Image (cartoon, rainbow, N blue to C red):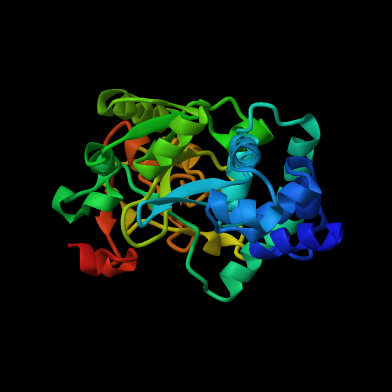
Length: 336
C-alpha cells in the first residue's frame, strides 16, 4: 500500500478520509510501516509477525511504541491479547494529546482540525440525528426528587460502583488553553482507568479523592459529561464551554447534536428568585436569562440540564425537574 493510501486508510477508519490534517497527524504519530501495521489490525502479535516478517520481540517493541503514542489499544479476546487502532476520531485525539513526547506540531494540527474539519463531522451528526457522542450528567444535589436519578446519570454513583478509577489531564484544556479551569479533573473508570494507568498518562485515585475532584470541578463551573452509550461508561469528564471538544459546539444549532442533554431542566421559583443573575453567569450554554426587573427564565431549547444554575443560586430558587423519560438514555430501559 502506497504511503498516501495507508494514511488515507487510517483516516478513513476515523470517518475523516478527506481530511489532510488527520493524515498529517497520522504521519507524525507513526511511520509508513507502522501505519501499515495499524491498518492490519485488529490482530495478535503473532499474526502481525507473520504478516510483516518480523520477530516477536521486534514486533512487540513496535506495538509498545504505538501504544505509548496513543495510536494502538489492547484488549483481551478469548484469553488472547489483541491490538487495534483507535475506534473513532475523539479517541485518537484524546490519546495522542496525552503522548508525553508529542511534538508541538501535533498540537498545532489538532487545533487546526478542531476549527476546520471537526465541525463538519458534528454538523453531520446533528443534521442526520445520529446518536450524540456525549451526554450531560446533572449535579445530583440539584434534582428536585433524587429518586428520579438513575445510577448511570449520577456521577457519585458511577464512581461508587467503579472497580478502578484514575484521573488524567483534561486534553481539551491542555490543547486549547483558553481558560484557567482545573486541568487534572478527567476521571477514567474501569477499562478506561486500566488503560491510562498502564500507559502512564493518569494516576489511580480512590472514590474519596474522585468525589473531591468532582466537587472542585463543580465549584469551577464545569459540566459533568459521559459517553452517550448503552452500558457502563469508561469516562466522566468535567468540561468547560471554551475548550471542550464537545461542549463548546453545543451552543451552535448546526453542531449541538454532539451533546445530549440530561433528562432534567431547571425550574425557577419566581417567589424566591432575587434576580441576582448568578445562574446566567454560570450557565455554560447561555440558556439562563434575567430580564430587567424580572425573575430568571430558562431557554428550554438551549438548556442541557447540567444543574450549574441551581448549584450557584444563593437562595436555592432553582431546582432540576424531570422532563424526559428514562428511555432517553441509551440502554436505560434494559438496565433498570
